Length: 170
Image (cartoon, rainbow, N blue to C red; front, side):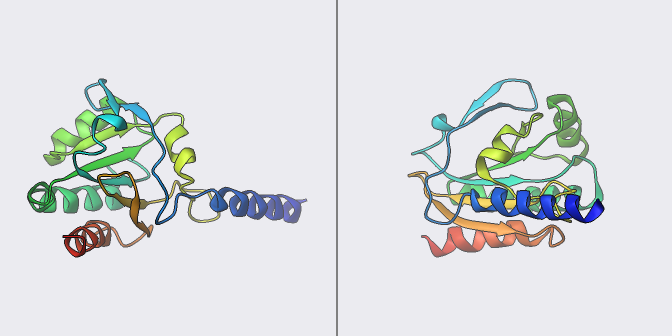
């Protein structure tokens, strides 16, 4: 019985991953509440800035805090490149507010409590889908995906990879 569940889980993950947003794709439109419970609308940013959208598992966990702090430390470089950083997880707006305050995070944090946007992007889970995935997308002003970086354990590399593709696009 366990082997049937395992096979079904693999089949689900494979089907789920095939719908993942890829380099060259147009980014799907979405709206989510931010840390202040105000609605963020993607359409308000497209055409104005390069977007660095990163999905992460959970506020205040060791890896997610390290990743967020690296984005924080590099934030001025993103701003100088006319880019906006946007973090998305299933945590509540209040959790995001506390996370931002605890770590002086200057960028946008969005609450995707039902994982609708995570699923819209097709962000794959890790460890056979048991953990929410950690994926960063760089999206140009036209809404075209220029980078997809998927790594659960290389927390610092997400910001570095995003900056590299932004600098190459200049």
